[in-house]
Length: 625
Image (cartoon, rainbow, N blue to C red):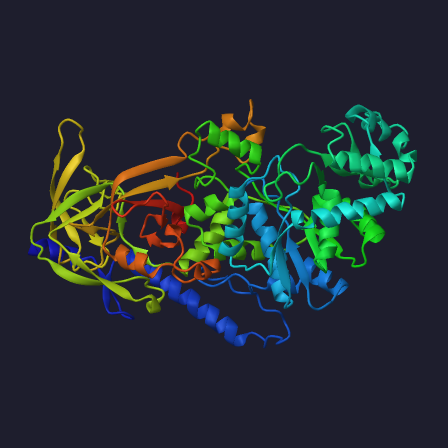
């Protein structure tokens, strides 16, 4: 053995700069590198002085730093221009959802824009439910919408309802008739279509009912109110400008008959105002200064302004921004309902969906969503974003805000024959000392992930294998596998025997582990629900694009005891609306499972069983699977 060492050493050369014995090739590489470094330094020394006015390239952003000033989207671009158009104080805005479904990721932008714009300018924002269609509204939607607004960190100035104004709106409808700006129409769909030019876009003409007297229209409208007509037999139309090139001026409907009790007003009304009649007037009633909506309402601006000028004194300013949508998923209520009803997902809050309640359940922090919207900025162009871009923002946010724990998805025991039980101190984040640390017992038997052991070694494999050394994160020494046992029936490894390798100071790889007695948990790994970026383009429809492997469940995973402290101290930190809601829901218990992914506790968890959802992959794992 000594002869072999002497013979090997004789082939090495002395690196005089470091005092190390290295191979001839290694010494040549080092010499070349040093010469290049010296030449670069000399060139810099002899270079002419730089112009101090010259722009320096910006350094790349660190992963653990916020991407932008959190108020950036209000200080520049579209929203800054909107305020300059009407620089009033106080600013008053509103978020006016229809309570007929659960909000999705696109609504997060609308919430951030409306509430954030008012807050940035020291004003207030209403949460106003546009509850004018009792056929589609349910109590659960009212509740869920308010919860999502507050979860995102916003407190409504007041919670109001369009239905609060039903009598006032009705009175204004009669006033519009008296101004000869509205009439009761009895036309069917085909007749209305013909009046608007038909399929061939021919000449437009006004309905004959528009020539009725004020008295006739008032009598007919009151007849609608009192039950004289059934749905679709009569409706109130605004007398606008049928010759205008904008369809929003083609005598829109103002009231229709609906024989349906209302969620809040019961059977008090048989007629209900339309969105086009209600929205602008309610904005005026509430003193809205800036009515901010998405660009599909850009044509509606002319009808919005027309009606307000006929009936009310306060004139809000409507401006339109591009909506947010994400590829690789579906956001339509109808399509999500189909996914739920046909069992492709558990419910509307399934973590694979992009409703806000689903994103919340997955464990995405509200602050990460606001950061995402802010990064995108607000323009008049629609934002169509890939899922990986959303995940990137979430990952960066989590990197600087959540602690780290060791989690083993598919555990296999390793018996370290020469180990004794000791206590080790493990930091919650090596990058953020302020998060603190926790104590963990290092036991003679530890559990590692089955994927971290291979029965037959290879050169490209750096984890544990027979006679191979690997490091255990924060453990006293690396370990070397000496033998293993297998189940004859399944062929699976059931136990690995190992010893400490005290000679190896810096193993090539470190793997996670948990001690014996660790908590058993169920882990759900969610990937994209669809196989493609455009599920709707799949032959036969979006259901034919379902990814059959969108969920993998590990029923017997193990997590270290530090989880108890993470759960007790959650959320880390108190972000956005979670602080207002107290300790937050189970999804506020978030952590990085070292070398695995980011996780949060699922609402299926009980006192006896913890269920975890994958929030997003680690950056280095983003391209896997």
